[in-house]
Image (cartoon, rainbow, N blue to C red; front, side):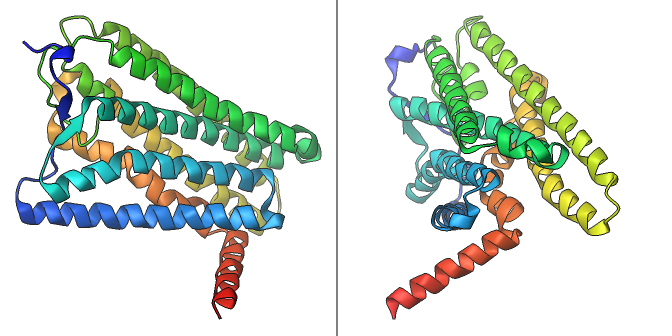
Length: 311
């Protein structure tokens, strides 16, 4: 029997065992990580330096890109380092930091996606009131509320999780420190308090999802009244990717956190974790921004400016 105070490190689940496949995993994650850094970095820079993109929609996109960079940087580099150096170890404090920052960035991102749905609802369904409802002060407050909610959620979950005695060893069946996997190491019924907090958080997340769906139902209802097919296409192309990413986060997150123990096994859990922790930060720049002509133009001008300065 091990108590949480009797060890100072955790052992993470490796993706593969052979050295060749470890290097392949390192290369794959490195490519995904660099793509996320490049895509989100370009979006942040383009929006920050293009004054015509200083609007509510792009302000929220900038915040989303910062959160994506934070979330993928919390999990992927450590997994890459473990594969490269053929180790599974993460320190106790490193594990706690990983839990905190992962919950922080993911919670704040989901809150921000809800705010973005509201922004699009106001833009399409309440265009005459858009300037009043979505002025700069309101946008800053909504973004700050999203970040603050993520911080509070992370603080509660991290403090609660690591206050629970751990008696089932220190092997975490995941490639990063994930709360459900840490709870499996807890003693008897000591984990029920954290499970209750997780259920409350997921219910609140589901409430946000319902808000997003209702917002888009009203958006689509308004769009269908527009006689122009071009208007239909623009609205649907803007909204459907947003709903797809939200649905992916909700479905994989609920499967990871609410599935019965009988369905839990290392390989499916590993794949689900990759889907909700690694894939969205890498593909969000493509889904949300790189198909946007204004972003493309801003990135093109940014490259031209860099080339001119180098000559």
